Length: 259
Image (cartoon, rainbow, N blue to C red; front, side):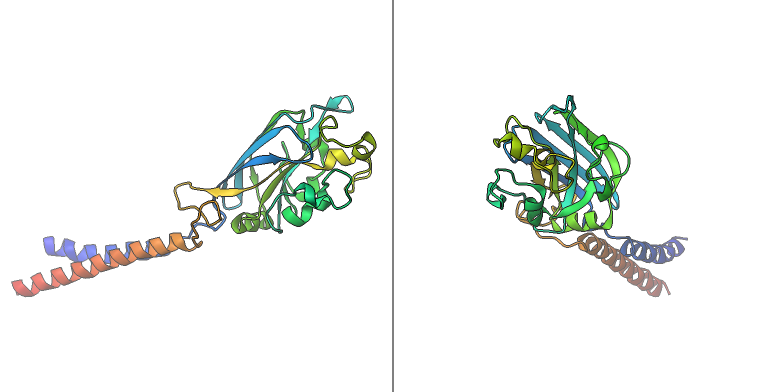
């Protein structure tokens, strides 16, 4: 009976090794991301965001405070997005190409790219919702906490380290420009003032450790590849196969000795 059990254990171990080796590797963009948002265009507010990503699902926790409170006697609608496909950096005052004192969206886009996901408070999160004020954060202090579906462009930006979060909507009291500049037509929508659509807070999403080694980037100093998990699984499978081979040898030797 003991010999039979040992013989049966060998194919079972081999099957386990094959199953381990065939396990899907974690996608390159999976993991936890975060950013402390920096101030732009005279903004005195603050913001932070964390993003926990698995496949096409992302749990967002955006916290903003101290931004402009009201707009036309109503709560100020601040829109915010994940941008991607560019350099993955936030603009600086040097990017104010027209010299009017405000770095607008078009002037910042070469650094942070186009909208890939709109961080709405509810409903759709596509780039088409980018200027949907009804789904923006309301007032000067608010949060966006929800799980959303992210598209391929967003996943690629996260994997490449070029995903940037931008919160829009300046405070005319701190922007440091004349009222006629702040209220001039936005390059995105002439029905909105330039100050209302220009970036107020900005930060690059950086992958942080969440049970796995950090994924690349200057902040971590560690460069790993998306196949790292698969490699570890394959290594584990190889060890099991080695154990299985050793078991076969032991069983056969003992059988020969008993013959």
